[in-house]
Image (cartoon, rainbow, N blue to C red; front, side, top):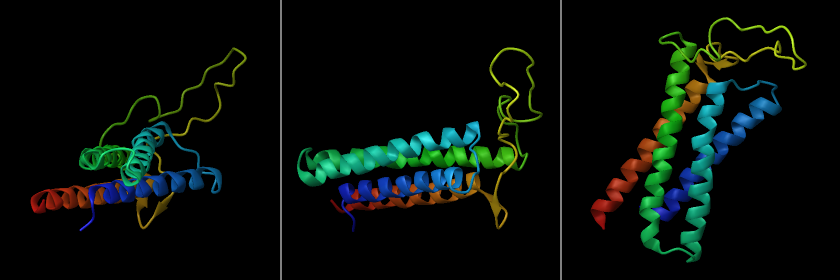
Length: 162
């Protein structure tokens, strides 16, 4: 059985890997993120910082071990939020429901001013990449929800045994 501080570290590591993967697709594969992609990144960044930082603080003794269980639950919650946003985004890509007007439907054009506001807008309802029918948002949803469920079950089981 994994201790809550180890679980927080593991969950934070998964979020870090997902963020690094997203950045790899962005900077190495040249797939720019849309607005909804950015929404999914923020909870993962928070989960990585809180899970890894808090887990290391508990492991080093800088923070009491009583802090480990609530810390792990916060990380589970953050990963769940990222997964839920991934489900929403994947549904927008599959046109199951509408997405935000800012990044779905036809692109807008503005004429005038010094800024290039006619630069292409990355559309949230068009998947830039798919593998086996799933987009990056779909994979984020699948991985995040699965990892969060495993983390929650582990915490519940650990709570029953203590």
